[in-house]
Amino acid sequence: MVRCRSPSRPVWESIRQRWGPMRDPLNWPTQDLVTHRADTTPDRTAMVAAASGNAVTYRKLDAAVDAVAAELDRRVDAPDATVATLLPTRPAVGTLLFAAMRLGATLAPLNVELDAATLQSQLSTVDADLLVCGDGTASLAADIDGCPTVSVDRELSAAAVADETAAAGSADETATDVTPAPLSRTDTQLVIFTSGTTSEPKGVRLTVGNLVASAVASSYRLGVLPDDRWLVCLPTYHMGGLAPFIRSALYGTAAVVQRSFDADATQQVLAEHGVAGVSLVPTMLSRLLDAGWEPPASLRFVLLGGGPASETLIERCRERDVPVYPTYGMTETASQIATARPETAFEHAGTVGQPLVFTDVTVVADGAACDPGERGEIVVDGPTVTPGYLNGDDDAFSDHGFRTSDIGYRDADGHLWVEGRVDDQIVTGGENVDASTVADTIREHPAVEDAAVVGLADEEWGQRVAALVVGNVSPEAVRDHCAERLAAYEVPKTVQAVDSLPRTASGTVDRAAVRSHFGTASESNESA
Image 1 (cartoon, rainbow, N blue to C red):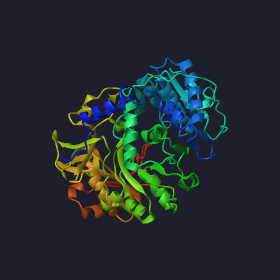
Image 2: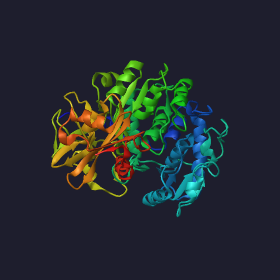
Image 3: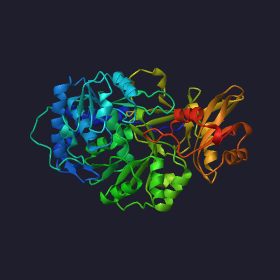
Image 4: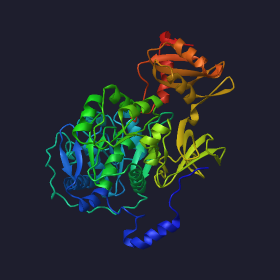
């Protein structure tokens, strides 16, 4: 069994003794991160709006956070309040995050792509005291009952200090003076709903300690320089989009915020703003490379997550000198679990590297830890792991830690491979079929761009193997290709060609939508 362990208790006790009780690193931060940062490096750039170039220092951001916190405090019963947001990616999201932290309130970012009924259910789940929308989401917010609503573009306009529509110096540095609430690392800071790729989305509680531990561990793996800038172009209602705000405030670096990814516009932003790092999902990176992108000299990290990266994509990165860092993470662990450096990714195709510092990863089968090379469920423990879901779900935790429902293995050097989901297994005619193995085989066809495989209910077989395929290829060619490489029971009985795979906002294949597609699509492009 190979594990990456956290420092022992005696080590932490010696650190406590050196720092003293008032500066105990295990109790830090005691106030919101912008308060700490503005006291330390007030004139460093905090946030930049990619389209306009509007930039604010930590001094300006601190003033904006103060103004927004004061307005929120008038409307909610902080520090026990929950403030929900219905906002697309924009700098104001970061301001709201730190304003909630300053009050000791919880922030619950909601997915702007959801319908009003689903959003209302999630608002009820988090027991929100206030919903913050913008001009672009005001009509959707109006369709939701039972929660007071304010606009970030009107009542909370100070939050938009770095947005495209704001004047660069618009924050009033002397407008208010909110006393930052004392923080504990066990305080719930965020509630983020999972993507719900295989089940109903769950509200994940993330504490101040989870967020800080994740940012610290990420810096150990990636490295940080004082002038680093991280491009935010992922949705900020997921952890991948929120994490750069937290990391930047902790490190004293800057977040460059692009409202939405576009292959042509994003490569221009990466070059013009001297971006050092960016978080992308595989489809985004593929589109950049398809558009002829060459990484600028400033770029040191492309954190690639949200789904498996094909060996072909990693090889393209090697050929283009893209500093790709394949990563494995999830909402329940406040982002990264394991991350491979480029040299590791290129030498060990398919790995997501070794676990980050402080993170324990155990591969478990039948309740016991697996030996190197043995497949099982990936279980994670450490300070980044959520204390739990809003609705409980004790089954998600075991003696080894949080059960990810992902299947994988680790080699003798501790490298982690993620091979699919526990529920990827299809039982057809009494035979077990691994959906990820079939999908990987289909992707090996030269005309196939991508594929997703699921099990569909079948009266004769119990389940039948079904595949959605992207590419200029016929269902018959896919089946013939698989028949040469797989056992007969693994060959998809149903194949449909599509223009693109359904994905969640975080870029993960939406397996529930894949199954639904087979129930609604016409038979004209199906092979059965």
